[in-house]
Amino acid sequence: MDRSTAAIDVRGLNHWFGTGEARKQALFDIDLSIERGRLTVLLGASGSGKTTLLTLMGCLREVQDGSVRLLGQELAGAREELLVACRRRLGFIFQAHNLHDSLTAMQNVRMGLGVHGSAAADWREPCEHLLRLVGLGERLDYLPGNLSGGQKQRVAVARALVGNPEVVFADEPTAALDRDSGLQVVRMLKALGEARGTTTLMVTHDPRILDLADRIVTLEDGRLVGEGR
Amino acid sequence: MTALLERLLGRLPIGWLQLVHNRGRLAAAIAGVAFANILVLMQLGFLGALVESIRLPYAAMNADLLVSAADMNTLADGSPLPRSRMVEALSVPGIAAATPLHYGKLDWRQPDGTIRTLDVFGVDPAAPTFRTPGIEAGRALLQNADVALIDRGTRNVPAAFFDGIARGEPYRFEAKGRTLTVAGVFSIRGGFSADGYLIVSDQTFLRLFPQRAAGAPNHIVLRLDPAADRSAVTAALRETLPAYDSIVRTVDDAVAKDQAFQTTQRPVGIVFGFGIVIGILVGVIIVYQVLSTDVADHLREYATFKAIGYRQLCFLGIVFEEAFILALLGFVPGVLIALGLYAAVAAVTGLPIAMTPARPVLVLSGTILMCGVSGAIATRRLARADPAELF
Image (cartoon, rainbow over all chains, first blue to last red; front, side, top):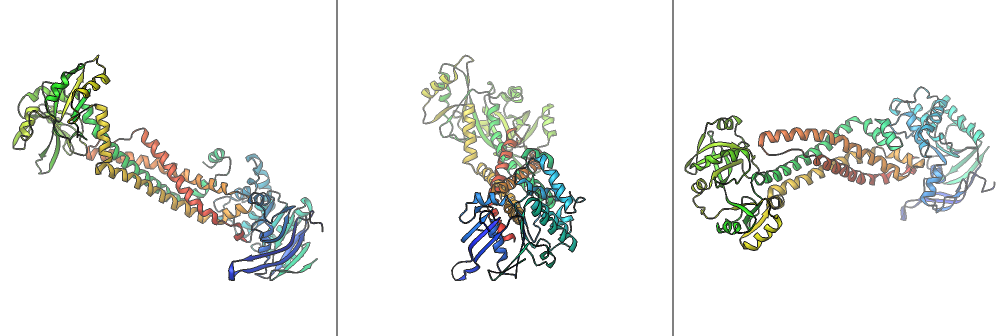
């Protein structure tokens, strides 16, 4: 695959945690290219390095050794301003929903749009549309404390998608959802890929989702060990 | 309120929403800021009362200039002046009148055994040393031996007592082995050094204070010819009077010197100054606690916002928004309660304590600054919001 056309391209990536004798290598010489518009699932046991890889590709951690190109930008040695600008082109779905407990569902989703400087008049329609899409049309003004775990996660999904991200990083996004809701969210991510070319990189253990993945990448002890589909 | 703030800020008022989400904490924070405001306002009120109570007796004088002893800091201290300075002052062109003013302190024992301390002024009953109506009206009475006029604002004395005197029912009491007859009332109001004022003639004064020499007043009250140039006369007086034992000042200068001395050199002024600092520190600590706890409680949310591309400036804005709102919400009850306390203190102590228009503005500005400082300290915690830890 051409490095310049890939959504994410990783070459010779190594990463360590700690210092001195406590220093431990988490990733070993990773080479990986993620195509645009595809749903890629990252598999691996706990501690295999998949979350570290996700945070490095998502501009949330500093690249120590090797190269990570995200949407054509080299992240190794990049300044904070560039990292912030890159993050604004991404969507994050966390295992814990991380919703702001003082904000309603609409306001939480609006935060995903506000980072792009949308005017007040511009935010209501897309936020409401996405919340209706994830089945929360009747819960727009609910605070997270009044929503179930699954509903909160769907708000988090709407927040990640409302800014039309080019890449979505998702860490166990369906863990808190029932079977139907989980499938609905993943199908939505996949449909976005097809319609808008959104790339999705997802860490999951959910076997139902593996069937929908375009590509499955497996990590073991910080090394890429397998690839499927 | 949310819509109004959104309009003002041009963004979602997250700080406000965070504050109202936890109403218990918001109430505690408002109470804390209000408490700090009350502390500062009360200390400023006491300091203001001290400053005002220093001014009042000067303001009551019928004086353009004052000659006092060179070592004088307040109306009540300093060495007595040679009476010859009065004659020398009268020789300066532009001086219309000069009258001696004696000062002393007297204990007035009440029927219940308690004592009221009075500042006593001995004046020439033939001259209008004071311009206060009650003193002027009763000045002729002072020609009689052992007659006095008393301050209606004397602390812890029932108003009915003064009403009786005003109706022409003189009151007699023993002091310094003499029987004084109080025949009239006036109004100055006591300060921090005494409970009230008593005016007697210079002859009565010397009988009450026999150790004082007749020819040595504490101050000389000067009045100028209406056409005289105050600056020129003051300069001429300074040329005429020896600087080693006397000092010439306008009444305003004398008030300023007295106020500066009592607020910076006397314990009472320093204590009130410290009180203001303590109030500000209490406010900073309370607001810091509230804001830093709030930041700590929302670290995951802030880290999430960082992950999706919000800059540090956005979080600083949220914390400062909270600080500003707390400052405003705490200020309103703080001022209202302080106003009530001012009235209570004035009623109980008779001190001239009142809210000046500038004081709330000063305290509000200080409160916003105080909350801003607390917010600035609290934002150090934001550095811990690491989006990489969210996964």
